[in-house]
Length: 332
Image 1 (cartoon, helix red, strand yellow):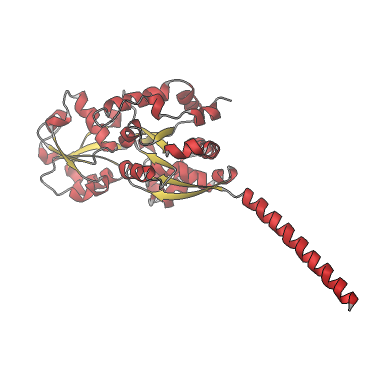
Image 2 (spheres, rainbow, N blue to C red):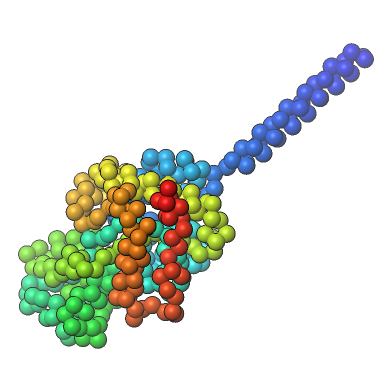
């Protein structure tokens, strides 16, 4: 009986030791658990290639991050979701930057220089140049990237939005309105404008693109929930680290980045690679120059000036562009 009691005590002690060790191991694992982030991307060549590359190349894993993705197709509703605390970081095109300039989110990094916006009309409208839009109806998603191009085009021709009629329509819905005779022109971005031109066929006329106004840059950027980066600077730095790694890889391997992005962008790889001429992916050297000089800040100043009618408040670029994360990377 005494022998059985000894054996039982040994077994119980072993079990306790095992339980203690397992608990310590579980605690250690929990301590090393990846930090979870909610991140928004767009199903475009600019809005998906960096994030897809980071996911496929394991750059987020290297930074011990668990990134959960959400897809949005335009900036304004995305930023509303971010303000509501539904996401920590997100990609936006240049058109929605006025919301960042108004202080709703912080700009934390450049992604690309977009060349995808264009203003399209139909041949039978008799419109052959931007000045011909006076008194005409232009369909555009207000506050988005196509709207920025429209403003630049009007200003370059001595006009303003008061000289035309604006029809506010989602960029996604632009192709379906090709037969609407009440619309004289459309200002949007690819791939929606590509679908529109296909639907119009020989009637399609491109009045202007980003390249028409080379003095203006149309930067697509990454923005962040202001409270999140204030409270989580280390996690935020690791996200930007991984993002920049992906962007540098993308510049060196654009076709591979498009292949990675195919699923996220919901477009075949060959359709994405065909769009490469429509976007400029900065190299490592170019990023360093943008961030370590005033180049990117100046780009944002110019964009803010174009969007001034939409911007609320009196915040400066220094107030709305948090450059500490990218400078920490490129200052070495």
